[in-house]
Length: 618
Image 1 (spheres, rainbow, N blue to C red):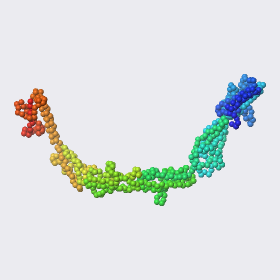
Image 2 (cartoon, rainbow, N blue to C red):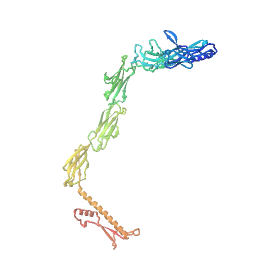
Image 3 (cartoon, helix red, strand yellow):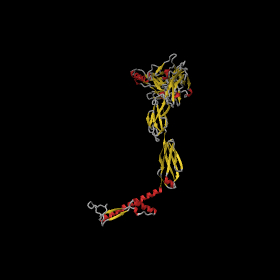
Image 4 (spheres, helix red, strand yellow):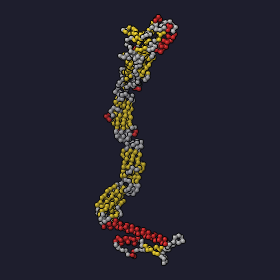
């Protein structure tokens, strides 16, 4: 838009003012806005206001547009309007132009090609002909600019001024312009520093596409910089702007620092751990890394153990020989510069765990012993003793065992720990063999059997050294060991002699002999005895029942008075005529005799029986 032109609103205001202020004039006056702005695709409306002296009627109104034909401007009529008719001429605007009731000209679907001058001409008879014009300004807001940073990377050592980014803005009218910004500050072209190249393309649609390329040197600090472009365009006499996204440019620069660290911390590494050496550099792109370990006065190349070129070296299941000095070396391919960094790896360990027993000679039952645990480590150690079930016995390197027996736990564990290195520990087991003569701890006696039955006789003993078991009778023997216990099962057939004599178990080793007798009991005799007892109990119950019935009967007949006054002693026998004597033969021996008589058909003599008398008094 040309400078000095007034916006439509101002032009209309000016036109109305002119119409009012000149109402007293004696000539035809026409008022139109100087400029009407409209966005492409919208509808433009151009007004034509006029004044005739003494309110005379107009003769005609003509609308024209100015066409530049072969470099010459000429007016092409669009409408001829009289009081009786409206005539539309056949032009390129046909079907896109219309008239309002106030004879204002409207143009629909405005394109950038419609931009130009439109003339309103009014004829008023004797008052002559007047005309005025309005410039139609068409605009198109550009699209948001698109920015694309330079592909690949830009080296800080580049000898030429490198391309930073390219910016494109499409479909605008009139033509916009583009500016560049770095971290929010506008960049200006400077010789040998900043270069901005712009290209303006006029599309077939009449719209403009503008592209701009920024060239500028970069430094290491530009790795954090953000670049963007801004497209500036005119709208209604004012400048507007649209910004692109902010982009980061890939800057290539050599490493300034190199860092090598051990993960986990070197102070906590122990044997068996997996250790990772991480080498990091602050260059871009990352340099090529190599790892070395110092062996005496030479460096051993460990690069073959690396994970590609990531700067990571994994050491698996380290031991004390893994300790030493490791070095990481970086090579920057941009300027071929090298840097290196070293670190010491300390692998903590425990070795030489051993247990000493005092006295070192064989331990006998009842004696005492001292166990001493020792080990070596470059860090401080603590000791702990546990039994074979894992129960903690004592803290410290020494364990005292007093009055030892076969039953004493004979396996002990010394646990060695390094408190400063979590998880670093080792254990050593030791067995304490207690010697002594055999001791029989279990036999199957008494054993209830039947004659001619096949039974198992069991004898279990404890001893060290391992004893041997001998039986006094013949049979099939089976032995098994459980720790220091030996058990022997003897399978035999029960004979009359075996029932009478039983069996002897004899256990012996070089330190002595132990033996015990196994008694066999005939189950038949036992059953008979039990039967006699049961019958005796039943008879006793019956006697008590009969006695109770007799007492109850006498009480009912009045023979036995009740109450304190009539209380009589029924325990002492007296020679009275009315004495009733009940003879109860309930001695246990006589009961057994009766049972035996029933069983064997023999009658015991009466002399073997005893009598009990109960005196029942009135």
